[in-house]
Image 1 (cartoon, one colour):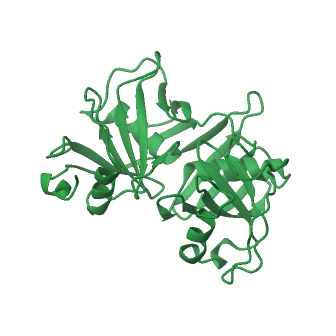
Image 2 (cartoon, rainbow, N blue to C red):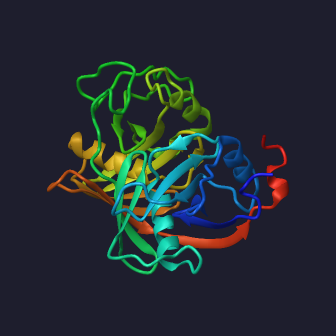
Length: 294
């Protein structure tokens, strides 16, 4: 019997990015990879990312978050999920706690301040991007990660060129294309995600710049697959586009699930992501869900 049996969860989404929020504050239980996979397998709690709240670690923060992909692996950041957590911590009658000012959440990638814009819209400070080949990380010491070398001789996409690479808590590779709808993510995404140049795998994005303040984006998420929205990928795309002179430092990113406003703030180099949240339903995990979990 797992400690998660009968635990309450919220099923939410950020632009269609499926998010399940689980509050384990006050408990010392840590979700295992097998438990995460079991939760993802149930239609009522199925997720792109599972956001698990733990008691704060760093003084002055409101919670520590662990983030799980559908395959049970852990992620360092999830912007859409962070907005959903912020809503839960400020509006859900069970999860909300008194908060002084804006929320500050912590992940293994660092601190994420969150500002509430309206009842369901939040701005997450995703922190500064990282460009060093060993920070992303990449296998090889590229001096300039605005474009990296990668084997793109794929029969499904023979015209692909070397992507830009950047870390926004997670490693991202952004391929610049003329038409984002022209690519079969299910066929191409797994091959690129697991390319040896990415020792920790990577989130794979196809980006179409339609103007100095607009990018169309489709994303294959590391450990989760094709998704309707990925906040950190949207951040990575704007940062990478600005570095290449394709856009300014502020742009709207249109994903299959909707729009995110991204700003790469010039004053301190932090990336700000603004977007909506939606509560779909709440539930509890039936004990039978974890029958096969060791």
